[in-house]
Amino acid sequence: MAGGGARIASVGIVGANIAGASTAETLRRLGYDGRIALIGAETELPYERPPLSKEFLTGQFDEERLTLRPRAFYDEQRIELWLGQRATALDAATRTITLASGERHRFDRLVLATGSELLPFPVPGADLPGVYSLRTLADAHTLRAALRAGASQGGRAVVVGAGFIGSEVAAACRMAGMDVTLIEMLPVPLERALGSRMGALLADVHRTRGVEVLTGETVTAIRGAARAEEVVTSSGAHIPCAFVVVGTGVRPALGWLADSGLAIENGVVVDATCETSAPGIFAAGDLANWPYQPAATAPALRVRLEHWDNALRQGETVARNLLGEGVAYRHIPYFWSDQYDLKLQYVGYTPTWDEIVVRGVPPESFVAFYLREGRVRAAFSSNRQRDLVTLKKLMAADPMLPAELLADDQLPLKELLKQV
Ligand SMILES: Cc1cc2nc3c(=O)[nH]c(=O)nc-3n(C[C@H](O)[C@H](O)[C@H](O)COP(=O)(O)OP(=O)(O)OC[C@H]3O[C@@H](n4cnc5c(N)ncnc54)[C@H](O)[C@@H]3O)c2cc1C
Image (cartoon, rainbow, N blue to C red; front, side):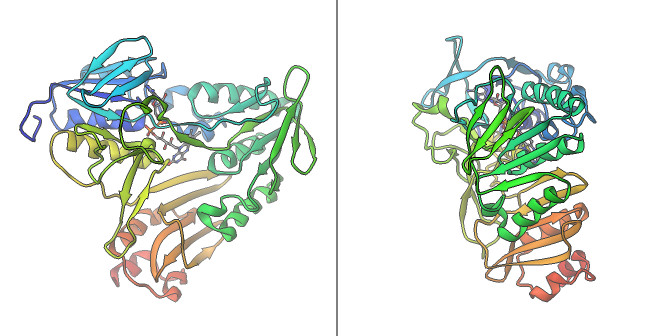
Protein backbone atom coordinates (compact mmCIF):
# COMPACT_ATOMS: atom_id res chain seq x y z
CA MET A 1 0.00 0.00 0.00
CA ALA A 2 0.95 3.56 -0.46
CA GLY A 3 3.51 4.73 2.00
CA GLY A 4 3.99 8.28 3.20
CA GLY A 5 0.78 8.28 5.25
CA ALA A 6 -2.11 9.50 3.11
CA ARG A 7 -3.95 7.04 0.91
CA ILE A 8 -3.52 7.77 -2.76
CA ALA A 9 -6.72 6.81 -4.51
CA SER A 10 -5.69 7.62 -8.08
CA VAL A 11 -2.59 8.14 -10.20
CA GLY A 12 -2.88 9.74 -13.64
CA ILE A 13 0.04 9.14 -15.99
CA VAL A 14 0.16 11.36 -19.08
CA GLY A 15 2.21 9.81 -21.89
CA ALA A 16 1.76 6.10 -22.61
CA ASN A 17 5.16 4.97 -23.77
CA ILE A 18 8.14 3.51 -21.94
CA ALA A 19 8.37 5.99 -19.04
CA GLY A 20 4.63 6.02 -18.41
CA ALA A 21 4.17 2.26 -18.80
CA SER A 22 7.16 1.57 -16.56
CA THR A 23 5.66 3.79 -13.85
CA ALA A 24 2.29 2.02 -14.07
CA GLU A 25 3.77 -1.50 -14.00
CA THR A 26 6.09 -0.70 -11.12
CA LEU A 27 3.25 0.78 -9.07
CA ARG A 28 1.39 -2.54 -9.29
CA ARG A 29 4.55 -4.57 -8.66
CA LEU A 30 5.05 -2.60 -5.45
CA GLY A 31 1.51 -3.41 -4.34
CA TYR A 32 -0.30 -0.16 -5.08
CA ASP A 33 -3.98 -1.07 -5.41
CA GLY A 34 -5.58 2.29 -6.25
CA ARG A 35 -6.66 3.50 -9.64
CA ILE A 36 -4.09 3.97 -12.42
CA ALA A 37 -4.95 5.74 -15.70
CA LEU A 38 -2.32 5.60 -18.46
CA ILE A 39 -3.24 8.37 -20.88
CA GLY A 40 -1.64 8.64 -24.31
CA ALA A 41 -2.14 10.53 -27.56
CA GLU A 42 -1.25 7.55 -29.75
CA THR A 43 -3.85 4.85 -30.36
CA GLU A 44 -1.49 1.85 -30.17
CA LEU A 45 -0.67 -0.09 -27.04
CA PRO A 46 2.62 1.19 -25.55
CA TYR A 47 5.45 0.00 -27.81
CA GLU A 48 9.22 0.07 -28.24
CA ARG A 49 10.57 2.91 -30.36
CA PRO A 50 14.24 1.83 -30.73
CA PRO A 51 13.50 -0.95 -33.28
CA LEU A 52 11.59 1.51 -35.50
CA SER A 53 14.89 2.64 -37.06
CA LYS A 54 16.48 -0.82 -36.80
CA GLU A 55 14.82 -4.25 -36.88
CA PHE A 56 11.36 -2.97 -37.83
CA LEU A 57 12.71 -0.87 -40.69
CA THR A 58 14.87 -3.68 -42.03
CA GLY A 59 11.92 -6.09 -41.80
CA GLN A 60 13.43 -8.38 -39.13
CA PHE A 61 10.70 -7.49 -36.60
CA ASP A 62 6.99 -7.22 -37.14
CA GLU A 63 4.67 -4.94 -35.22
CA GLU A 64 3.82 -7.63 -32.63
CA ARG A 65 7.46 -7.70 -31.49
CA LEU A 66 7.29 -4.00 -30.61
CA THR A 67 4.35 -4.07 -28.21
CA LEU A 68 5.52 -3.78 -24.61
CA ARG A 69 2.66 -5.85 -23.15
CA PRO A 70 -0.53 -7.40 -24.57
CA ARG A 71 -3.81 -5.70 -23.76
CA ALA A 72 -4.70 -8.54 -21.37
CA PHE A 73 -1.77 -7.55 -19.17
CA TYR A 74 -3.18 -4.07 -18.59
CA ASP A 75 -6.61 -5.55 -17.89
CA GLU A 76 -5.21 -8.03 -15.37
CA GLN A 77 -3.17 -5.29 -13.70
CA ARG A 78 -6.16 -2.93 -13.67
CA ILE A 79 -4.18 -0.30 -15.55
CA GLU A 80 -6.75 1.78 -17.43
CA LEU A 81 -5.58 2.62 -20.94
CA TRP A 82 -6.90 5.93 -22.19
CA LEU A 83 -5.43 5.76 -25.67
CA GLY A 84 -5.92 8.31 -28.44
CA GLN A 85 -6.42 10.96 -25.75
CA ARG A 86 -4.24 14.05 -25.85
CA ALA A 87 -3.83 16.22 -22.76
CA THR A 88 -4.05 19.91 -23.60
CA ALA A 89 -3.58 21.57 -20.21
CA LEU A 90 -2.62 21.00 -16.59
CA ASP A 91 -3.83 22.77 -13.49
CA ALA A 92 -0.96 21.92 -11.19
CA ALA A 93 -2.57 23.23 -7.99
CA THR A 94 -5.50 20.79 -8.23
CA ARG A 95 -3.67 18.11 -10.28
CA THR A 96 -6.35 18.34 -12.96
CA ILE A 97 -5.69 17.64 -16.61
CA THR A 98 -7.79 18.75 -19.56
CA LEU A 99 -8.08 16.44 -22.57
CA ALA A 100 -8.54 17.47 -26.21
CA SER A 101 -12.17 16.33 -25.86
CA GLY A 102 -12.66 19.05 -23.26
CA GLU A 103 -13.03 16.57 -20.38
CA ARG A 104 -11.26 17.42 -17.15
CA HIS A 105 -9.92 14.80 -14.75
CA ARG A 106 -8.48 15.26 -11.29
CA PHE A 107 -5.98 12.77 -9.82
CA ASP A 108 -4.42 12.42 -6.38
CA ARG A 109 -1.01 12.14 -8.01
CA LEU A 110 0.19 12.87 -11.55
CA VAL A 111 3.09 11.66 -13.67
CA LEU A 112 4.17 13.61 -16.73
CA ALA A 113 5.76 11.37 -19.37
CA THR A 114 4.94 12.98 -22.70
CA GLY A 115 8.47 12.43 -24.01
CA SER A 116 9.79 14.03 -27.17
CA GLU A 117 8.29 15.37 -30.36
CA LEU A 118 9.92 16.08 -33.72
CA LEU A 119 11.52 19.45 -34.28
CA PRO A 120 9.91 21.44 -37.09
CA PHE A 121 11.75 21.30 -40.43
CA PRO A 122 10.94 24.68 -41.98
CA VAL A 123 12.29 24.11 -45.49
CA PRO A 124 10.35 24.80 -48.72
CA GLY A 125 8.98 21.51 -50.03
CA ALA A 126 9.19 19.70 -46.68
CA ASP A 127 5.44 19.04 -46.91
CA LEU A 128 5.69 17.20 -50.25
CA PRO A 129 4.69 13.54 -50.37
CA GLY A 130 7.83 11.42 -50.10
CA VAL A 131 9.32 13.48 -47.24
CA TYR A 132 9.23 11.36 -44.09
CA SER A 133 10.21 11.57 -40.44
CA LEU A 134 10.44 8.84 -37.83
CA ARG A 135 9.03 9.06 -34.33
CA THR A 136 5.95 6.86 -34.20
CA LEU A 137 4.94 3.39 -35.31
CA ALA A 138 2.74 5.00 -37.97
CA ASP A 139 5.81 6.90 -39.29
CA ALA A 140 7.78 3.64 -39.33
CA HIS A 141 5.10 1.80 -41.35
CA THR A 142 5.17 4.58 -43.96
CA LEU A 143 8.94 4.64 -44.13
CA ARG A 144 9.22 0.86 -44.27
CA ALA A 145 6.88 0.78 -47.28
CA ALA A 146 8.87 3.56 -49.00
CA LEU A 147 12.12 1.73 -48.31
CA ARG A 148 10.79 -1.49 -49.81
CA ALA A 149 9.57 0.34 -52.90
CA GLY A 150 12.81 2.33 -53.20
CA ALA A 151 14.93 -0.80 -52.84
CA SER A 152 13.05 -2.64 -55.58
CA GLN A 153 13.04 0.35 -57.93
CA GLY A 154 16.69 1.25 -57.32
CA GLY A 155 16.34 4.84 -56.11
CA ARG A 156 18.31 7.11 -53.79
CA ALA A 157 17.33 7.86 -50.21
CA VAL A 158 18.37 11.26 -48.89
CA VAL A 159 18.64 11.36 -45.11
CA VAL A 160 18.85 14.77 -43.46
CA GLY A 161 20.70 14.76 -40.14
CA ALA A 162 23.45 12.31 -39.18
CA GLY A 163 22.50 11.90 -35.54
CA PHE A 164 21.94 8.37 -34.27
CA ILE A 165 18.45 7.92 -35.74
CA GLY A 166 19.34 9.47 -39.11
CA SER A 167 22.47 7.30 -39.25
CA GLU A 168 20.48 4.17 -38.45
CA VAL A 169 17.98 4.98 -41.20
CA ALA A 170 20.84 5.62 -43.66
CA ALA A 171 22.35 2.25 -42.71
CA ALA A 172 18.99 0.46 -43.15
CA CYS A 173 18.48 2.02 -46.59
CA ARG A 174 22.02 1.15 -47.65
CA MET A 175 21.71 -2.43 -46.40
CA ALA A 176 18.50 -2.73 -48.42
CA GLY A 177 20.56 -1.89 -51.51
CA MET A 178 19.54 1.75 -52.03
CA ASP A 179 21.91 4.56 -52.93
CA VAL A 180 22.05 6.87 -49.93
CA THR A 181 23.09 10.47 -49.31
CA LEU A 182 23.40 11.54 -45.67
CA ILE A 183 23.43 15.31 -45.15
CA GLU A 184 24.78 16.79 -41.91
CA MET A 185 24.85 20.45 -40.91
CA LEU A 186 27.89 20.07 -38.61
CA PRO A 187 31.40 19.70 -40.03
CA VAL A 188 31.54 16.28 -38.33
CA PRO A 189 28.50 14.18 -37.36
CA LEU A 190 27.78 13.98 -33.62
CA GLU A 191 30.73 16.29 -32.93
CA ARG A 192 29.19 17.88 -29.84
CA ALA A 193 28.27 14.57 -28.22
CA LEU A 194 31.29 12.45 -29.18
CA GLY A 195 34.02 14.82 -30.34
CA SER A 196 35.47 15.21 -33.81
CA ARG A 197 37.57 12.02 -33.80
CA MET A 198 34.69 9.66 -33.00
CA GLY A 199 32.28 11.63 -35.19
CA ALA A 200 34.67 11.39 -38.15
CA LEU A 201 35.04 7.68 -37.48
CA LEU A 202 31.26 7.22 -37.74
CA ALA A 203 31.12 9.25 -40.96
CA ASP A 204 33.80 6.93 -42.37
CA VAL A 205 31.77 3.88 -41.33
CA HIS A 206 29.03 5.08 -43.66
CA ARG A 207 31.40 6.17 -46.43
CA THR A 208 33.15 2.78 -46.52
CA ARG A 209 29.71 1.16 -46.96
CA GLY A 210 29.05 3.38 -49.96
CA VAL A 211 26.94 6.15 -48.38
CA GLU A 212 27.62 9.64 -49.68
CA VAL A 213 28.11 11.73 -46.52
CA LEU A 214 27.89 15.51 -47.00
CA THR A 215 28.98 17.50 -43.94
CA GLY A 216 28.76 21.22 -43.19
CA GLU A 217 25.73 21.37 -45.47
CA THR A 218 22.08 22.14 -44.93
CA VAL A 219 19.02 21.47 -47.04
CA THR A 220 17.62 24.67 -48.55
CA ALA A 221 14.70 23.16 -50.49
CA ILE A 222 13.01 19.94 -51.52
CA ARG A 223 11.56 20.04 -55.01
CA GLY A 224 9.21 17.94 -57.11
CA ALA A 225 6.03 18.20 -59.14
CA ALA A 226 3.74 15.92 -57.14
CA ARG A 227 6.26 14.43 -54.70
CA ALA A 228 9.87 14.88 -53.54
CA GLU A 229 12.18 14.43 -56.53
CA GLU A 230 15.31 16.34 -55.59
CA VAL A 231 16.99 17.90 -52.58
CA VAL A 232 18.80 21.23 -52.92
CA THR A 233 21.64 21.91 -50.46
CA SER A 234 23.41 25.04 -49.21
CA SER A 235 26.38 24.38 -51.51
CA GLY A 236 24.02 24.37 -54.50
CA ALA A 237 23.94 20.60 -55.06
CA HIS A 238 20.76 19.12 -56.57
CA ILE A 239 20.39 15.53 -55.40
CA PRO A 240 17.75 13.38 -57.13
CA CYS A 241 15.85 11.20 -54.66
CA ALA A 242 13.22 8.49 -54.33
CA PHE A 243 12.37 9.88 -50.90
CA VAL A 244 13.74 12.06 -48.10
CA VAL A 245 13.95 11.21 -44.41
CA VAL A 246 14.26 14.11 -41.99
CA GLY A 247 16.17 13.16 -38.85
CA THR A 248 17.01 16.57 -37.46
CA GLY A 249 16.13 15.85 -33.86
CA VAL A 250 13.45 16.28 -31.24
CA ARG A 251 12.40 18.57 -28.42
CA PRO A 252 10.51 17.85 -25.20
CA ALA A 253 6.74 17.57 -25.74
CA LEU A 254 5.68 20.21 -23.26
CA GLY A 255 3.46 22.61 -25.21
CA TRP A 256 0.47 21.39 -23.19
CA LEU A 257 2.19 22.51 -19.97
CA ALA A 258 2.68 26.14 -21.06
CA ASP A 259 0.17 27.57 -18.56
CA SER A 260 0.74 24.99 -15.82
CA GLY A 261 3.08 27.15 -13.77
CA LEU A 262 5.55 24.25 -13.48
CA ALA A 263 9.27 25.04 -13.56
CA ILE A 264 10.30 24.39 -17.16
CA GLU A 265 13.76 24.69 -18.63
CA ASN A 266 14.90 22.29 -21.33
CA GLY A 267 12.08 19.97 -20.23
CA VAL A 268 10.20 19.73 -16.97
CA VAL A 269 12.56 20.48 -14.09
CA VAL A 270 12.55 17.77 -11.42
CA ASP A 271 14.50 17.19 -8.21
CA ALA A 272 16.55 14.09 -7.37
CA THR A 273 13.34 12.16 -6.61
CA CYS A 274 11.85 13.12 -10.01
CA GLU A 275 9.26 15.39 -8.40
CA THR A 276 8.42 18.59 -10.29
CA SER A 277 8.11 22.04 -8.73
CA ALA A 278 4.47 21.13 -7.90
CA PRO A 279 4.08 18.68 -5.00
CA GLY A 280 2.58 15.33 -6.00
CA ILE A 281 3.42 15.79 -9.69
CA PHE A 282 6.38 13.80 -11.03
CA ALA A 283 8.05 13.63 -14.44
CA ALA A 284 10.05 10.88 -16.13
CA GLY A 285 11.79 9.99 -19.37
CA ASP A 286 12.62 12.24 -22.30
CA LEU A 287 10.52 15.04 -20.78
CA ALA A 288 12.37 15.34 -17.47
CA ASN A 289 15.32 17.60 -16.76
CA TRP A 290 17.00 16.03 -13.73
CA PRO A 291 20.11 16.50 -11.56
CA TYR A 292 22.93 14.14 -12.53
CA GLN A 293 26.01 13.58 -10.41
CA PRO A 294 27.32 10.01 -10.78
CA ALA A 295 30.06 10.40 -8.15
CA ALA A 296 31.10 12.84 -5.45
CA THR A 297 33.99 14.22 -7.52
CA ALA A 298 31.85 14.64 -10.64
CA PRO A 299 30.43 18.05 -11.51
CA ALA A 300 26.74 18.50 -10.67
CA LEU A 301 24.90 18.67 -13.98
CA ARG A 302 21.33 19.00 -15.13
CA VAL A 303 20.46 16.68 -17.98
CA ARG A 304 17.53 15.71 -20.14
CA LEU A 305 18.26 12.48 -21.93
CA GLU A 306 16.55 10.86 -24.88
CA HIS A 307 17.39 7.28 -23.90
CA TRP A 308 15.13 4.26 -23.61
CA ASP A 309 16.90 2.95 -20.49
CA ASN A 310 16.57 6.31 -18.72
CA ALA A 311 12.82 6.40 -19.43
CA LEU A 312 12.36 2.86 -18.09
CA ARG A 313 14.35 3.41 -14.91
CA GLN A 314 13.02 6.87 -14.15
CA GLY A 315 9.52 5.41 -14.40
CA GLU A 316 10.51 2.84 -11.77
CA THR A 317 11.91 5.52 -9.46
CA VAL A 318 8.83 7.68 -9.88
CA ALA A 319 6.60 4.74 -8.90
CA ARG A 320 8.60 4.20 -5.72
CA ASN A 321 8.41 7.86 -4.85
CA LEU A 322 4.68 8.05 -5.55
CA LEU A 323 4.44 5.50 -2.76
CA GLY A 324 6.50 7.68 -0.46
CA GLU A 325 9.91 5.98 -0.59
CA GLY A 326 11.75 9.23 -1.27
CA VAL A 327 14.61 7.62 -3.21
CA ALA A 328 16.98 9.60 -5.41
CA TYR A 329 17.33 8.62 -9.07
CA ARG A 330 20.96 7.60 -9.42
CA HIS A 331 21.60 5.59 -12.56
CA ILE A 332 24.56 5.78 -14.86
CA PRO A 333 22.80 6.38 -18.17
CA TYR A 334 23.40 4.52 -21.39
CA PHE A 335 22.01 4.13 -24.88
CA TRP A 336 22.78 2.01 -27.89
CA SER A 337 22.65 2.35 -31.65
CA ASP A 338 22.92 -0.39 -34.28
CA GLN A 339 24.52 0.57 -37.59
CA TYR A 340 25.49 -2.17 -40.08
CA ASP A 341 27.43 -4.78 -38.09
CA LEU A 342 28.34 -2.32 -35.31
CA LYS A 343 26.63 -2.37 -31.93
CA LEU A 344 27.40 1.10 -30.60
CA GLN A 345 26.94 2.05 -26.96
CA TYR A 346 27.40 5.24 -24.98
CA VAL A 347 27.63 4.97 -21.19
CA GLY A 348 27.66 7.86 -18.70
CA TYR A 349 27.42 11.45 -19.80
CA THR A 350 29.75 14.38 -20.09
CA PRO A 351 29.30 17.56 -22.09
CA THR A 352 33.06 18.30 -21.96
CA TRP A 353 36.25 16.28 -21.58
CA ASP A 354 40.01 16.83 -21.40
CA GLU A 355 41.07 13.77 -23.36
CA ILE A 356 39.75 10.65 -25.07
CA VAL A 357 41.63 7.39 -24.49
CA VAL A 358 40.91 4.49 -26.85
CA ARG A 359 41.40 0.75 -26.31
CA GLY A 360 40.86 -1.79 -29.08
CA VAL A 361 40.49 -1.36 -32.81
CA PRO A 362 38.04 1.28 -34.08
CA PRO A 363 35.51 0.98 -35.55
CA GLU A 364 35.05 -2.82 -35.30
CA SER A 365 35.77 -3.31 -31.60
CA PHE A 366 36.82 -0.57 -29.21
CA VAL A 367 36.03 1.56 -26.17
CA ALA A 368 36.73 5.31 -26.14
CA PHE A 369 36.94 6.71 -22.61
CA TYR A 370 36.04 10.39 -22.08
CA LEU A 371 38.17 11.69 -19.21
CA ARG A 372 37.68 14.82 -17.20
CA GLU A 373 40.35 15.65 -14.62
CA GLY A 374 41.66 12.10 -14.88
CA ARG A 375 38.33 10.35 -14.26
CA VAL A 376 36.15 8.48 -16.73
CA ARG A 377 32.85 10.35 -17.19
CA ALA A 378 31.62 8.63 -20.35
CA ALA A 379 32.55 5.84 -22.72
CA PHE A 380 31.60 5.23 -26.34
CA SER A 381 32.11 1.73 -27.68
CA SER A 382 31.53 -0.57 -30.61
CA ASN A 383 30.81 -4.31 -30.34
CA ARG A 384 31.69 -4.34 -26.64
CA GLN A 385 28.28 -5.09 -25.13
CA ARG A 386 29.96 -7.34 -22.59
CA ASP A 387 31.65 -4.27 -21.03
CA LEU A 388 28.43 -2.37 -20.32
CA VAL A 389 27.98 -3.35 -16.68
CA THR A 390 31.67 -2.97 -15.90
CA LEU A 391 31.74 0.47 -17.46
CA LYS A 392 28.82 1.58 -15.31
CA LYS A 393 30.54 0.23 -12.20
CA LEU A 394 33.76 1.95 -13.17
CA MET A 395 32.02 5.29 -13.48
CA ALA A 396 30.22 4.88 -10.18
CA ALA A 397 33.45 3.81 -8.39
CA ASP A 398 35.11 6.89 -9.90
CA PRO A 399 38.82 6.02 -9.65
CA MET A 400 41.74 7.99 -11.11
CA LEU A 401 43.11 5.59 -13.71
CA PRO A 402 46.28 6.04 -15.74
CA ALA A 403 45.59 6.40 -19.46
CA GLU A 404 48.03 3.51 -20.22
CA LEU A 405 45.86 1.09 -18.26
CA LEU A 406 42.66 2.27 -19.90
CA ALA A 407 44.27 1.94 -23.32
CA ASP A 408 45.65 -1.56 -22.67
CA ASP A 409 43.20 -3.91 -24.37
CA GLN A 410 45.04 -6.95 -22.96
CA LEU A 411 43.91 -5.89 -19.50
CA PRO A 412 40.20 -6.80 -19.19
CA LEU A 413 38.05 -3.96 -17.84
CA LYS A 414 36.92 -6.25 -15.03
CA GLU A 415 40.55 -6.54 -13.89
CA LEU A 416 40.86 -2.79 -13.98
CA LEU A 417 37.81 -2.50 -11.78
CA LYS A 418 39.32 -4.94 -9.26
CA GLN A 419 42.29 -2.62 -8.86
CA VAL A 420 40.02 0.21 -7.77
C1 LIG B 1 13.29 5.74 -34.19
C2 LIG B 1 13.82 5.82 -32.79
C3 LIG B 1 14.90 5.03 -32.43
C4 LIG B 1 15.42 5.10 -31.13
N1 LIG B 1 16.48 4.31 -30.80
C5 LIG B 1 16.96 4.34 -29.55
C6 LIG B 1 18.04 3.50 -29.17
O1 LIG B 1 18.58 2.74 -29.98
N2 LIG B 1 18.48 3.53 -27.89
C7 LIG B 1 17.93 4.37 -26.98
O2 LIG B 1 18.37 4.39 -25.82
N3 LIG B 1 16.91 5.20 -27.31
C8 LIG B 1 16.42 5.20 -28.57
N4 LIG B 1 15.37 6.01 -28.90
C9 LIG B 1 14.85 6.94 -27.89
C10 LIG B 1 13.83 6.27 -26.99
O3 LIG B 1 12.86 5.61 -27.77
C11 LIG B 1 13.19 7.34 -26.10
O4 LIG B 1 14.19 7.82 -25.25
C12 LIG B 1 12.02 6.79 -25.32
O5 LIG B 1 10.98 6.39 -26.17
C13 LIG B 1 11.51 7.85 -24.35
O6 LIG B 1 10.38 7.35 -23.70
P1 LIG B 1 9.30 8.33 -23.04
O7 LIG B 1 8.25 7.43 -22.51
O8 LIG B 1 9.97 9.29 -22.14
O9 LIG B 1 8.75 9.24 -24.23
P2 LIG B 1 8.13 8.89 -25.65
O10 LIG B 1 8.63 7.60 -26.16
O11 LIG B 1 8.33 10.11 -26.49
O12 LIG B 1 6.58 8.72 -25.35
C14 LIG B 1 5.77 9.78 -24.95
C15 LIG B 1 4.33 9.44 -25.29
O13 LIG B 1 3.51 10.52 -24.84
C16 LIG B 1 2.56 10.83 -25.84
N5 LIG B 1 2.18 12.23 -25.69
C17 LIG B 1 2.88 13.33 -26.06
N6 LIG B 1 2.20 14.45 -25.74
C18 LIG B 1 1.05 14.04 -25.17
C19 LIG B 1 -0.08 14.72 -24.62
N7 LIG B 1 -0.13 16.06 -24.58
N8 LIG B 1 -1.10 13.99 -24.12
C20 LIG B 1 -1.05 12.62 -24.12
N9 LIG B 1 0.00 11.93 -24.64
C21 LIG B 1 1.02 12.62 -25.15
C22 LIG B 1 3.27 10.55 -27.15
O14 LIG B 1 2.32 10.32 -28.17
C23 LIG B 1 4.09 9.30 -26.78
O15 LIG B 1 3.38 8.13 -27.06
C24 LIG B 1 14.84 5.97 -30.19
C25 LIG B 1 13.75 6.79 -30.57
C26 LIG B 1 13.24 6.70 -31.84
C27 LIG B 1 12.07 7.58 -32.24
